Amino acid sequence: MTTYTDHLRDARALLADFPVVDGHNDLPWALREHVGYDLDRLDIADDLSAQLHTDIPRLRTGGVGAQFWSVYVRSDMAGDDAVSATLEQIDVVRRLLARYPKDLVRARTAADMEAARREGRIASLMGAEGGHSINNSLATLRALHTLGVRYMTLTHNDNLAWADSATDEPGVGGLSAFGREVVREMNRCGMLVDLSHVAATTMRDALAVTEAPVIFSHSSSRAICDHPRNVPDDVLETLAANGGVAMATFVPKFILPEAVAWTQSADENLRAHGLHHLDTTAEAMKLHAAFEAANPRPTATASTVADHLDHMREVAGVDHVGIGGDFDGTAFTPADLSDVAGYPNLIAELLRRKWSAADLAKLTWQNAVRALRAAEDVARSAQASRGPSLATIGELDGTA
Image (cartoon, rainbow, N blue to C red; front, side, top):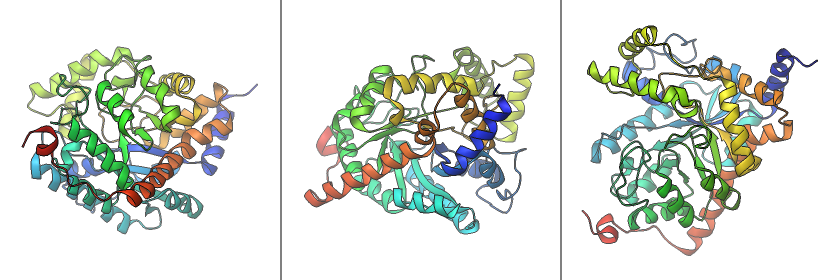
């Protein structure tokens, strides 16, 4: 009889060959919030489990081979303030790579990712979380790509003038004319279009425009947990033709229906104490702990995530699923996926569910690498036929 210990052993062996490409980790923002980017005060070469979800030893234990580091800024930042804060996030990622070259290596291309895997280093890419980071400027978008950003999430939690968010009221009804031009310019640059956080109308508009595969860097299945941050089945069904990848997230409020209302109450508790609901500083976590002691939290597990992946594989196909944990961007995690060391637990659960080694290799590594390579191919073709877009939001949408 095959035991959990057997599955876990096999999971670790599989990850040694095909490590996890994780679509979204908010360590850069956590470093901003905890220590103002002072890497001497939080050395990720050490065990930081008392403060963070992420450090190098646990990335190694978890079998992570590539990480899209989120260069996120909150969506209540606007204009040039958002651009500057995004540049600060990019700067700290570059400093991490310089500080830990034996473990982390910059990756800009799919070929770079494969080279890092051969070298036994963690390929480090960047993703900008929210189109507010470009302040309605396609030149700024291109500059972020030049600095190494390889995806942009079109929105965060709030609408933009050119794109609707999943967690805001309908605005332009998906993408505006300028929003569609943003997608086209991302295709021309070779930057993946990330549809996590966007409204379903925005997902559909982007898929109608894009020439390259899209990703969902950290979203799960709406059919399994009916949250607007998740992907509807009709959108999942389009990924086969598009070549895109939906990367299941671990955030309990997006994967466990019972956790949705509980987390809303926990967020309100933070706001009542004058803190932002996304705050994960020590003060915020102390408030969360007290709230949880009085109001026991519904607990997600690796099995919960596996339920989403089973459904996403069934609807989109095994070539179009991946993993995006959202570590250090959430206050709460599943019981057995509590930090970046936990990925083997998820793979063991999927092995228990009879996922084949070939399918798991696609989930962990191959699908994400293929999507980036395809985006690069589209970019080469597009650049041969058209130059940088000089369009403005005023010209296309009639706004300033």
